[in-house]
Length: 115
Image 1 (cartoon, helix red, strand yellow):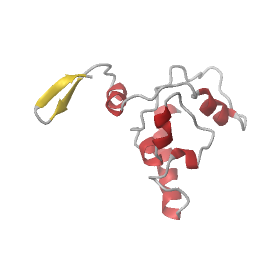
Image 2 (tube, rainbow, N blue to C red):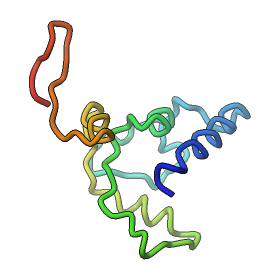
Image 3 (cartoon, rainbow, N blue to C red):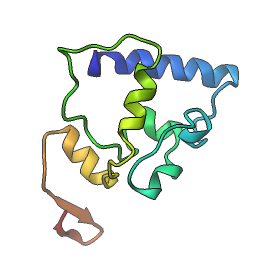
């Protein structure tokens, strides 16, 4: 599953946007009220940020491929398990997606410093 589902999920979300059932710029909490993170900034995460992977959501350390859960409560249990997870800075997320843990961040004058 993992990354192979991203195009399908994005397509489904955009179909819901076209129908007027989902607002890309609405907070995620509007649609997933049990969502919590150990960082108050989670309240500002939007659907658009989730679809574009720029929300700051922490990476999953263990997908538990050996213990799949298919019951109706699986998604809610997973979401509730995130309640102590911190948000990552947006640029850290972008770097993590490319396998980089530390990098220099450019600004208008060139490189500002280590992230």
